[in-house]
Each structure stands twice: as structure tokens, then as C-alpha cells.
Length: 213
Image 1 (cartoon, helix red, strand yellow):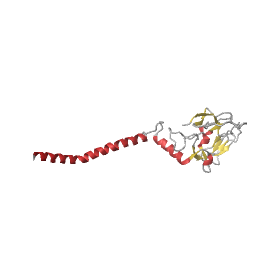
Image 2 (tube, rainbow, N blue to C red; image 1 turned 60 degrees about the horizontal axis):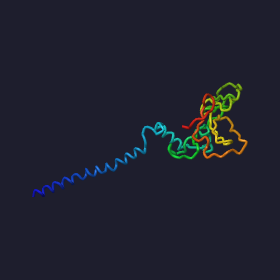
Image 3 (tube, rainbow, N blue to C red; image 1 turned 45 degrees about the horizontal axis):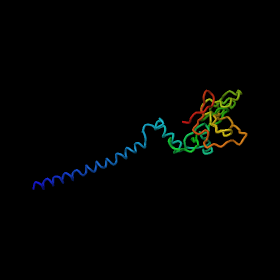
Image 4 (tube, one colour; image 1 turned 30 degrees about the vertical axis):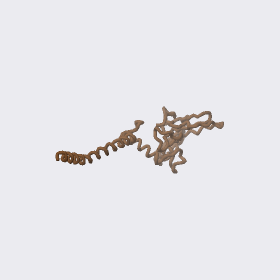
């Protein structure tokens, strides 16, 4: 009889422990998956490049909505920021991915050209010779200014990149008002766009090149 009571007590204890055992096994199976997902997602507060997570998400979202490689892909009244020197990765191509050698930008409202500059939103060109913009019906001087030297700029938006295939695979920084250089020969062929991952910016009044962000 003593042996029977011990067996019954043992079976009762074993049955009561089954739910706890099942819960433990479930946690052991789920925990690694949750940890793996957290690693794949990366830090919530930022990216590997040090760019804030919110800013990166906003930039990627805008690129996905308004991506363009040239102004021809934008709607009427817009221009692609690649003409201002933008050179972003193609939409959906991450920092560690192998991306096509094509610079992408986003479509933005076009700003009216005014001599060596471009007018801001809501402005019109009042004096093209001097590059003076004013609100509609605004007043400005009508003096005649000397044309700026090639590559002259007052802001980053006044500069653009130009892929020069004439004598080599060269990337040049030009002002948005500068004409494209004319090559007298057939030029060369390049495997990668010379201006890939390059951006034009204004440095001390002259357009220059730097690595694209």
C-alpha cells in the first residue's frame, strides 16, 4: 500500500508540472527568434551610418515616392535634384548592397533660372543680368552686371555635377547656368558613371566636388 501511494503522488506531481514545462519550452523557442529579429532590424534610434533613424526613414520614404534619375522622369514644373548634384542610392538599395552605378534624386518644384542663380519658391526673376529675384511685381535695380566666371556660385543649389567622357572618366563641378562642355572627339567609355556617389557644392564662391552623403 505504501508503494501505491508514492506512485500515485509521483504521477500527480508530474501531470501538474506539464503546463510549466510546456511554457518553458515555448519561451526557449520564441526567445531566439525575437533576438534575431531585433538584430536584423538594427538599433531603433539610428542607423549604421550614424544618421538618425527618423531622418533616414524620412529620406528613404521621399526617395521611394519621388525617385528620379533625370528631370525627364518628373512631372511638369518639377526638376530632378540630380541636376543640383544629388547622387543617392537607387530606391531600396541599402548601404551594404551592390547598387547600379546610377545617381538618383527626388523630384522637386522647379525654380526659375535668373542669370547665375535660381529663384526661390514664389519668386520671379527681376534682373537676369545680376541674378536678382523678387516676389511677383517686386522692384529691383536694372543695372547690368558682369557675367560670373564659370563655376561661380552663391549656394550649393547653384552647382551641379557633369560626367565628362571626353578624354577620360572625369566628374566636374559646374554651375547650373554653365553650358555642358563640348567634346571635339568621340570620347571614351566608362564602366561606372564618373559622378557616381559625388555631389557638387559651393565652396568659397566656386563649385566643387565632394562625396555624396
